[in-house]
Image (spheres, rainbow over the protein chains, first blue to last red):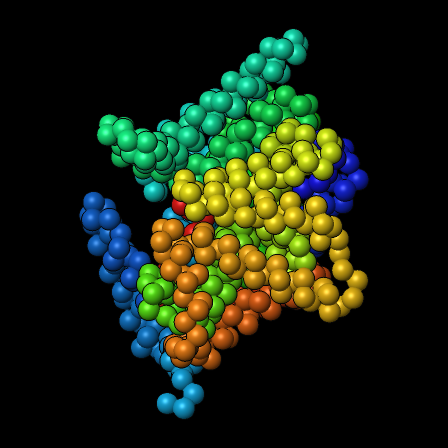
Length: 110
Length: 473
């Protein structure tokens, strides 16, 4: 907070140095948006397979005024959650959750 | 709409897909992003959108008027009125109740029985952030640091862009407007050059900090202790204030990380807002690393206009104090925030006077300085977190209760504290190294890695997500 001159677009040397330190993206690799679409689609697909229950819980919280649209989404997400659970796709998610809860509750000596 | 929710994830996937589909149509892309930002903001309360629109129109008009006025006196008048109008909006919504309560207390103290009436005013979320952006815009136009935006759409997007709208970072017009302005018939980010690896890394780290570290520190320890500090012994009180100090960092820096990451996925570059603040060796350094967009804002629009360090040590120290007290008041309309800012100001004045802010050379002096500054920050955060000054007083008094055993010293809490602190001592280039490694992976592996990371955070996180602490500011 002791920069002696008001920092303008050019600014003082300390200001420019500080501005350079704040750049998170300098020299970072870029990629096409299409590739990013693919990454997000795979990530979202994986999440929807392994934790489909989150989708059905989300659907139940949809506003009632959506009427039949809401009913359809709730039914579809519930069916999807049941199908993925029957196929055992939730197992790793549940196991990770249980293991974490055990650590959370662990008291040495008890 | 909170970042770590399915609501936001679905909202973002739609916005992301549509924004890149409109990559070749700059005006439509900007209009779409403005509409999406207003939907995001209206999710809390649609009436807030009117305030956001009014603030944007005010600053757009002021910028155009300043730009079109050659007379320096008139320009000064316009910028003064625009800043006053911005502060009036902020003052009404955020500080009206505080001033009325303080005035009533004062009148009662001097024996006057009359009370000024209170108004029930809802604090619009993020008002401090977008008001400060508006002020920085008109002042920068006046100073000639940025050209007044000719496009209302550009200014609407600058003020309302949803990643940083409700809890920062406070983005400068000189950084953002050049990224969206029409030049040579083309504007906006290039779809073949998305800073995706760093953006995804920031989002993932931000989710981890918020969902795991900040949420568990709050629910498993900090909230309980601050609710009733009379009940706990000194060791628990120490653990809880370490916990809160790390919680607020993990909470607020997580928001910034996710905001910067989301903006990067949409093609926009924001600056770093936190830089491992708890490894600071002086309070001055702490403020160069903590909430950088606010501390640089205060430097450029309060400290430097007051005279900065150009008029001798006495006035420098006065300016430091004034800036930090205002910084404290920015955080909340209550005396505890004012006192918090004043204590930081006093520490900086002392550092300036005695030369304590000079970097130490010996490793042990550096380590000692880090420990001392960290604990100064911890102790002042008691004022920040306590609901009332009485609670804060009880918290300080509780440090003398040394005979009670620690209730919260569990492996889980210790693990959260250690990870929260360790984040401050990771070598600086680690993030870049990981992002570059991620960028070289095949696309299916990248997608699976992001999916597994998000699933792990979801599985390990508590049910439900608390709002971010800085939403209240």
